[in-house]
Structures are given as structure tokens and as C-alpha cells.
Length: 168
Image 1: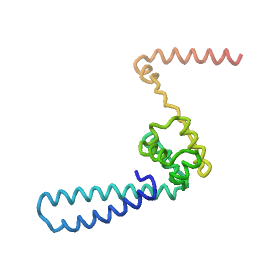
Image 2: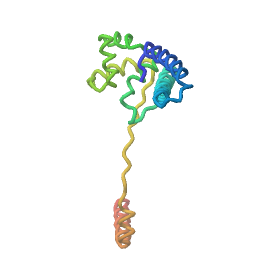
Image 3: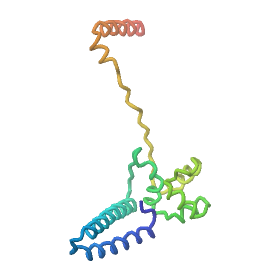
Image 4: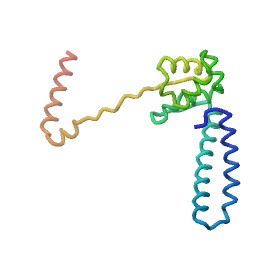
């Protein structure tokens, strides 16, 4: 993941260099040259995806996260808010290098308190909504009722009696 404009610039330059290298090998029929060109093309694709992701985050007005990309959430919020690593570090009064270390490790080593502190700073520019979804409960009743029809009839009778008692 590209974390800042400096890395964006480096990635863009790397793509330009790799494109030139691929062009030099494109006429070759040597198996090693073909394999090398293929490896460079794969790297170009990876870098292109990272650049697109960074640019999307820079221009985002709304972000959506899932449990699969939750570790990147804080980084994505920083990029989308338009803050640099240096600005974030200054806002929470730590060294820029510490933010760089946190982001290099997707905030795995940051304390919960530190992450909350960072989210407070970032939420000034972006509205953060957290929605917790309850796990769906799987009912065994349909299976049980299918296997033992008389249980369904008895449970319905019990429900009727309880509802009558509650009303009266």
C-alpha cells in the first residue's frame, strides 16, 4: 500500500523504468528474457493498483471498510482526510517516524489508546460511522420440526398458552 505522496512518486517512476525495461526485452525470444519481462509486467500491474488505491483514497468523500481490510482503516482515513504523516504526528505530538512505523505495520503494534487518539484527530475531517452487526443465529427448529413433527405441535400449544396467560 502506498502511504504518502513520496511513495506515490517513487512508484510512478518505477513504473516508467519498468516499462522501458519491458520494451527492451519485447523482441527477444529467449526464455529468460520472456520470464523477466513477465515478472516486470506483474510488478507494473501491482504498482498500478496501489497507485489507483491511493488516488481513490485521496479523493474519497466516503469510505467503507470490512473486516478484511480493517487493518488498513486508519491509514485509509489519514489519506482520505488529506493529512500527511507529518501533520498527523504533529497533531498527536509524536515523531513522524513513529507514524511511519505504525503504518508500515498497519497499526498492529499501536496501542488501542493511540489508535483512538489518532481516530479523534482524523474524525475532524471525516465522519466516522461504525456499525456493528449481530451475528445471525441459526435456528435448529426447522430441522427438529422436520424430524419430529409432534414437537412442533406441542411447542405451538405452549406458545398459545403463554400468550393467553400474558394477556389475561
